[in-house]
Length: 287
Image (tube, rainbow, N blue to C red; front, top):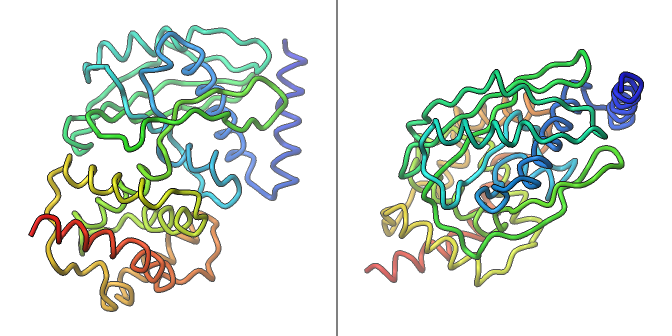
């Protein structure tokens, strides 16, 4: 086992060098991948739907932003912390000797996330280890959101040659819909630059179905009871060129080691062109 772990660490270091990435980032991705393998190999595979940065990595690989946590939507589960502790204890005890990862269920904690959706979310933390390497894994679980269309199934990419997690995941349309709804809801207060980046990347990729995206956005607005006013500051030049927001954008790109040549005005141009017509349809339907 020790030789196997040393070999895995060596191969992960090689990947970091080849990709020009920090070794710690590759370790984080590896732990996330192997945790996902256990979640979706468990009896609770149909109770979790992957979303967030870990899903975007699977969809976009090197074009995606780095993420330090895993986000799930819980399906047919209550948001009781004690129940989730029990579930992740079972998941953490699943053995898969090939990857060398050990999840220490004794370190499990679960605390409420009070600003997560209609119902309070739960943040799970648990320590993962690979030999002498240890890292606290963070898993944010949301409840009560609507999915349009139904969850998709996908093979999650693996860093090394071993069994791939068969994950249940958000559709691209639902990812865009939820992030767009947050942009409308937060308006001028929005400092979540990662959402603008993610939506821009997904709209550029054009891997979505337009009519499904229309329905996903309408359903998300209706479910979250989001007010759609006839005009919105999100689509204005003033929003795209605001000096404070531009500074936040550059800080986000630098921190995330992303393309600093991508201007916020270009991002907002794409978002406005693609999503403002859908927004106007929602306004007209409610008027």
